[in-house]
Length: 135
Image (cartoon, rainbow, N blue to C red; front, side, top):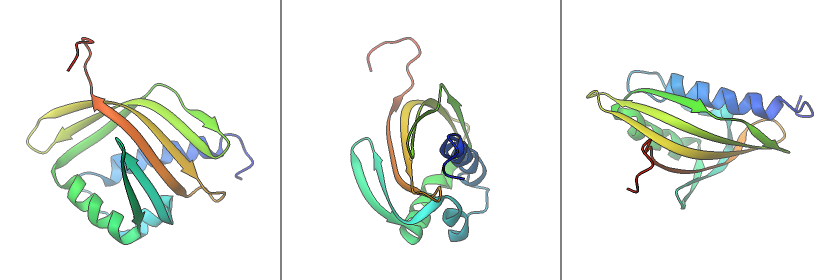
């Protein structure tokens, strides 16, 4: 399965689908849901801040993170695979429970173990600026 060149891309696509399903204030989220995609221990790096994560502390983090998210969606420009790593330049659209819509430009890097579980999630993001003006 992991020898199939599309295996890790399909896992990255599943992650984005999972985020849409699980990371809203109304969705159900359990530690078992996290186990579907993530290794027992993994690293998260967001805009240079590094976190050592496991099922329990990531579950706590995600519950706080999703508490004011009504919906989450992605527009992925492309999926670039290098061995067990997938890089996705994308725009994320976050709709907050109070109605505010936020757009973020991001580059997401996801590294998987041989079984397709996430062992490293890294992203760099900024507020989307369609006019190209400096922020």
